[in-house]
Amino acid sequence: MPDNTETPARHQIRVEEAVKSFSGRVVVDVDHMLLGDRPIEGLIGPNGAGKTTLMRMIMHATGLDRGTVTLIPNGSGGDEVVLSRLPTHRMAGLGVVKSNQVIMDFEKLTIWDSLLLSVADAKQETPYRMFGEKALFEQHEEEMREHLEFFGFADPTLHAMSAGEKKLLDIVRCLLLKPRFLMLDEPTAGLPDEMTEKVMQRVRALADAGTAIVIVEHDLNVIWKLCDEVHFMAEGKLILRGTPDEIRRHHTVIEKYLGEGHV
Amino acid sequence: MNLNWLSAFLITGLFSVVMVAGLALLLHLQLGLTRIANFGVVGFFGTGMYVYGVLYVRVDWPFGDPWQFLVCALAGTVAAGIAGTVVGWLIADLDVDAMLLGTFGFATMVFILATTQKSLTGGALGMGGLRFPYKLGTVKANEALWLLILVIIVAGILFYVARVHRSPYGRMLIAVGDNEALARSLGKPAFRAKLLQFTVGSAGMGLLGVMYGVLERFLVNTNLGVELTLAAVVALVLGGSARVWGGVIGAVLTIGVFDIVVQSYLPLPKSWYGQAIPVVKQMVYGATLIAVLMFRPLGILGGMRRDKLMRRVHGA
Image (cartoon, rainbow over all chains, first blue to last red; front, side):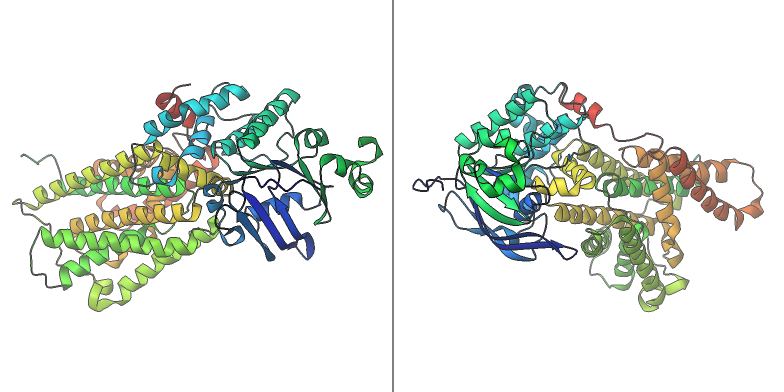
């Protein structure tokens, strides 16, 4: 089990007795789970284990049948917030951000638009503020260009075209929200190796700066290399929690998920 | 000023073009950007018109025009905005079909209220007593100035819509209309944004109703038929529902061509004007809507071009 003597000043999320079922089939049934205990945590499990649904429940993009999801800001340095009572759009303001497993983009918006949308706050998006575009752009131009250059976007005035570009744009949008608790749902799926490495660089840097990261990923090399702690889910339940080494040597995990060849 | 060139018929025709352009511009914000399908345009228009008319005629105001007009016009606009908030609250989270039915239902309610509340509205017989808030000497001069005021108001709406496209607010509306779940995950309060936008748009439609009521000076429930909603929808879809100028171009090509060119300048038999032309007009509008949706669903101006706008505003 991880060393908990050092309490990081990171956001943590506590999931308690959270149940979600679709058409009578229980998809998530987690008794207790604490996320954000360690800088980078992995969430793994076979297909249908409930990983993505659990993340959506944390964001309240999927409602809970019962149970609670609670944000513990700054490693209990602030007042707890029950996320499962809040609408989804409040999450980003609390620093809780999630990238998407399936490719999601705004068909009508260009890359610039997408980035500016992420950095704009509610005060800048009111019906009577008609002249704030230039100031918004200038305020965030350096930061946006730095991301675009790092990930190699060609022309930000165009729409994101390829699946990989849309996936990266989704991640950049999340990064621009300045997350304190970032959930990445298969962030490297469909990306070439060098892009995967770049995403991982950004994730590490963010974790070093104090953001709690939770990654759902089927590429286990990413999990083993990056994560300080791994949660293993199967059939909607949290089965195991431990360091990557502990998890990859566990009999149940090998049997249910990894297979002998991956140990 | 010599106004001989301006016939009463031309003033009414131009007024209709500008007014429908204004309604289509407001509808563009709702449908074109935020994807709120509003088939009850005339309901909000009628709320503004009748609240204004009833207050102006039935209330014994301690002051005269222009204050009487301004207070009543403000009340009509606010009432339409409040109606927009209530209807928007009910429909904003529903799918497009339900939005269409809900807004159409609201317009029907306004029509029924205007018809049945005879002591206030005059019912089917109508209500007179409205007048211009100024006197220039001749009816034509009064109407011409009223047309000019409407042009200024609609130009203001056009300017506002153009600015919305270039503002963070407009981008947020487009994002909400485009992919609401994704917009919410980025912290955008989609429901509130739609509700506020619907409220502002409805209030604008109410103001245009006030303007029309004053021009007509006689309110009758036949003003509240589906024809006006259809005209705004056809204009917007024909011009291009996602483009700033779509509604304006569409209004010129539909109302402008039909109400001004065909009715004023084509040598049509006089007997046609009573029954045939209004019916033919609705048929042509309906056919235009079908043809546009079949052959050019994005309208004459086509889809939204954020790439061009971003190049112009921010460069590569």
